[in-house]
Image 1 (spheres, rainbow, N blue to C red):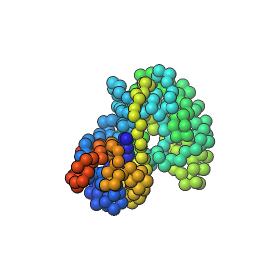
Image 2: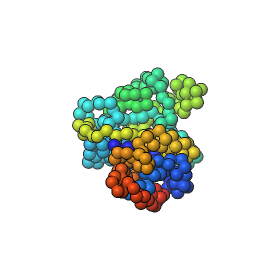
Image 3: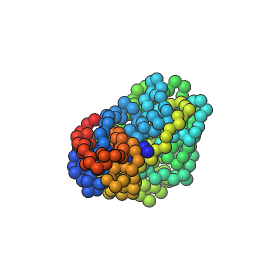
Image 4: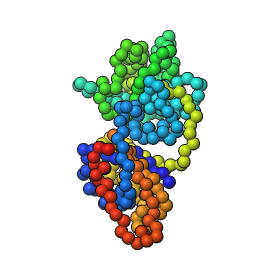
Length: 313
């Protein structure tokens, strides 16, 4: 069994302190970390254009990065719901750009809480602006549209999950090739300013939709068959938000509800388990196997798991 836990590896500045709390808050996971050697690896979000979890999803689906594009380009076909007309698939997520005194940041897309009727109204306002621009738009879901780009425009972009919370001037391309997109986006932003949809969203405490985030660009491929995996995502949102109290609460629930039932008499999995822990800048794989025969009678040697948990891979 493969268990994948996005958000399981906390940010390095707080990892050491959180490690001290694992024996109490997540005793099963703590025992597993002590029992098996880890295979930690660094993850370069900027070089991949996606999060470690998105990268794992693309690897598992058999996507091979295309020349001139980052791995995250494969999210276009992966998230487009089976669309395959042979063309590159670009996505535009409806997002909120938070403007500070000297920088702009992208709000976590996971908290946008978009509704179908809101997206439909925003699209009705934006659609006329696409005419005669070389761009075309198609709604896919409340939070996501598919875009068609002018011939020859193939930017390297990163997913909104990868960019959220970071300084946008490090991700926002300012070259001449992207000028048509920036011009169109600026017109859409002005059309959405004080839009009735955003007034209604403000009334219910939701952030306004004030931008589109362009990403993807990969061409569809035949997905590889993969063994089933159990993906536990409850740590992902608090890890991205840096809410470590909520992260510890979610970890305790995850440990009790999902890991403890798999543990045998001595706390190790009763059947072999591959565990993949993911963070912002690193990941770690562990293989846990039951101790059989005479080994089951002896104390298991304990690994120094904090050596990799609290340090760069």
